[in-house]
Image (cartoon, rainbow, N blue to C red; front, side, top):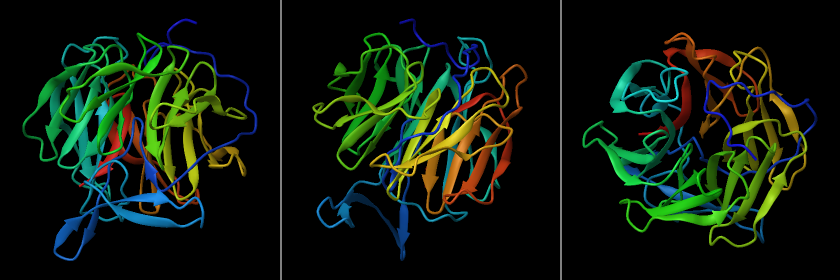
Length: 340
């Protein structure tokens, strides 16, 4: 199999069909980190599914990728501005940030990245992948302490965390890699995924999920690397890029390469039922997904031919109140995360 092209490279969209799915109350991949505010201080928890009683129980956890965020102006949306269709952006890629209500937009919150793609928030830090520098970058959530080369990891796109480790698709080794949060203990082949076209990863409920763009599948395995199912979800998945998990559902972006439209957002239950490939449709082409509270956010890269024409979309988790231009002015936005 040939390596999938980078954002901005043509790829024929498969025929649309119904879909299957997965889910739970959190988000990842090219996606999410989040936080909960209680009283006068910030408190965070990870919500683990109760497989016996069908309930969810909060578990003490460092603020990060697995948490639930109430939609308010006090949190932020972060997105990766890859910048242009050129494979190597030569340090011109940036990270954008805005308030959760769409105000206070800053397209240059973090600068100096090279083909920034995936985002993940853990505790006081935001992590990103530099696809062409084959590194993971890190900074504090206030934008200070920028390190564009926290660790070298091989050709990469998305990134996710369970609050203890970082996970990413290693396209060089057809695997998912894993490392400690400080960049040490790198294992580039933690989990074999069988091909070089995995774009994003997500972690939820003791599982890791990944989106395989060329094979039109979403895979799943246990967090210890066992129980690998490379086609956990396939029916109706069409060029999946970003994935997000929340409230018993999995959401995925069906992305049509180098097109301004032709994509959709699919949704299904974690057991594969109630699958809907066109849960959110219309004239757009989503890539990265993130969830906080009652809202789903996504990136619309467009063709990337003209800087500043990408957008951030938003809708309620029930698929209503769709706004494809919730935030405008982004430049080939790819990964997205939500947090403090």
